[in-house]
Image (cartoon, rainbow, N blue to C red; front, side):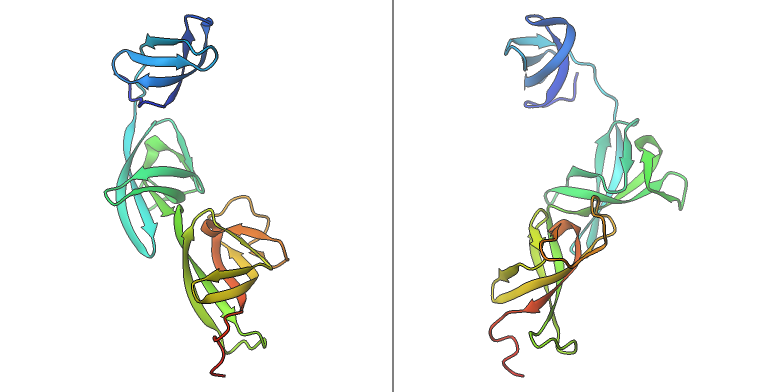
Length: 219
């Protein structure tokens, strides 16, 4: 029996338009004889799918300073790499996570990439919703009178240098963004040019000028 669910995409031959070459089909009804619909011609038919072997691997998820473990079923021949993102199902919620570390079956050894079969545990960080640390300086440029806050935002929220953000009673203009070590696709680890954008899930810390009206009234 296959491990597919309704809505999955599979490659099989279509008796109507492609009896010799596989085409992409949508699974309509899983089971022993899977009901699929051809993506090329729309023909609906039944077929049998080969079951793909899988192994259960431990996944440690870090979120808001806390860690918990779950398991992921994966192809033993698949490669997992530092920075990869995938979905895990936990008792608390379904989370999107990013790989921050890979521990091999060989004790006390961490690597940047490995074949799943050789992995003891995958260390990850939740990235669908994240907490971002912000350090704010007053408008007069003083470095002594600063304040900090933590923003909880979706991982794909965009922070852009030069833009003014408002969260509740806090308002600030972004002057710089430090990028996390596990982020991919950025040329630098700090951005301070107007227009530079970093996603929340990739932001280690944001610096800004405090625009909150009453923030420094006591001074």
